[in-house]
Structures are given as C-alpha cells and as structure tokens.
Image (cartoon, rainbow, N blue to C red; front, side):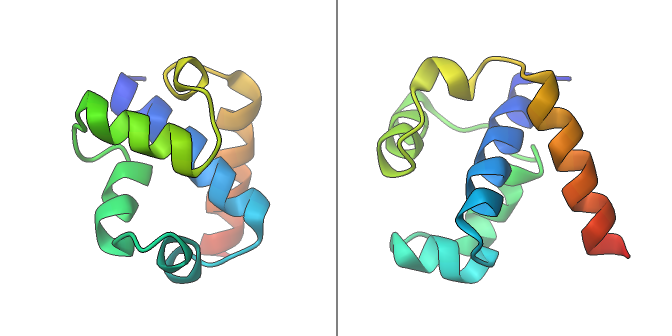
Length: 85
C-alpha cells in the first residue's frame, strides 16, 4: 500500500464518520468532491500544502494522515463492500 492510498483511506474514513455523502461532505468545506474522490481512491499525488489543508479542515493530525492504520483499512473495505452491494 502506498502513501496515496493511506491518505485516501484516512480521508474516506473521516467522511464516512461524518455520515455525509461525498458531495455534501466536501460541499460543506467548499471543496471539489471530484478532486477529493480521486484522493480518497489513492489516484493522485497531493502536495504538502494540500496535506496540511486536509489536516486542518478535517481535524486529523498530519502524522495520522500518513501512517498506516490496519483498523481503518479494514473499515474502508467494509464501506466499499456496502457501496457495491
């Protein structure tokens, strides 16, 4: 698993915990849901400034955004399975 996927997992977990859809979640913060969808899926590299923005907006310490967390990986797989079902 690479760093892009790890950041995406943390972001998706934060969104899921909010109970909001992607559109509503990112709209709440004035951010593009399309752009952040790509981040959640680990499809794009983001710069340190975007990492800092995510940290501030979603109140997730930067160090947590880049650390592998098995619990969140498992949780993301369950979310993805629910979405597909």
